Image 1 (cartoon, rainbow, N blue to C red):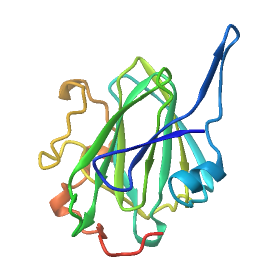
Image 2: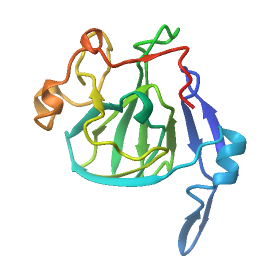
Image 3: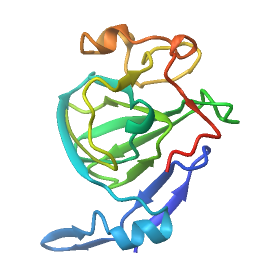
Image 4: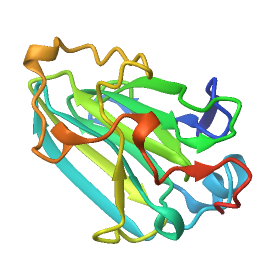
Length: 190
């Protein structure tokens, strides 16, 4: 059975799977719909994604807008990343606050990020393979984003700014205060 660890922001949880080690290596159950529904919340994941990135890559802070918003369950299968989830629900007691967790091939941790949060990660190892499950399909043209380096968020990405590698798109994301496509705290997202 997986262990569920609560974070400082309600709804974001860290999951630690049970790992069976022996002379051959290890075995773990990375996901069980039944356990997830019982221990976290009922969510049906419909799409799995994977990315590979090198040291210094920062992806994010991304989200899908409105009815296309996505809950995500993320993990690292190779390397090490700093994973970030930012509360972008206007009126939330934790609006603009973030959770930062190191996910790695060695700690096997997974992070669940519900709808209403922007998500991103920074690669801390030479290479990282990052996997995530989404509870809604990706909708082209319905993306939203917040600047990774927004000073109001106070995120320490654990990488020197001169070493950060961004996509052209992520290099021009708006500050949180200028983002017009945020969620309302009282809006039903599930």
